[in-house]
Length: 108
Image (tube, rainbow, N blue to C red; front, side):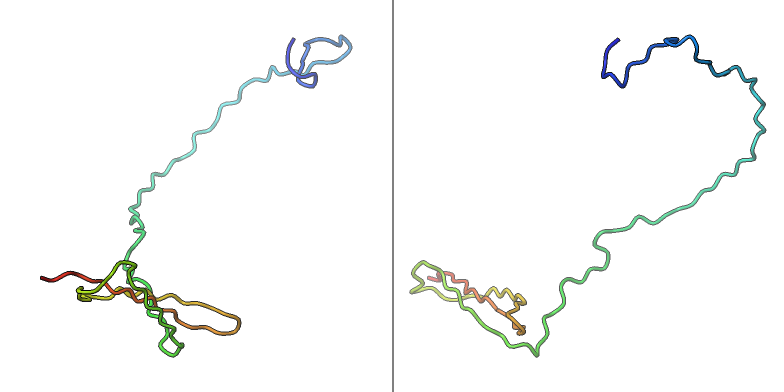
């Protein structure tokens, strides 16, 4: 015998205990009618007809933050700006914070 004390089993340890009669005759099982069902299911797409994030409301005040590169930009020409808008919240006030990054290139 091994295992925890509560898991030990000793068969016929008590001669005064009755055994249950498990010798029951099998009864025939009636055949149940079966039905085959087939269907086609459209597989769901994760990004179906996704148009991207909605524009931020135009009535909110805008705080612009201009970020310049740390390198010297003398002699360089600004060719485009990368703008990131994020919605920010300060106690009872919503506003849009725009980060404007100038991108420079050297033209000779």
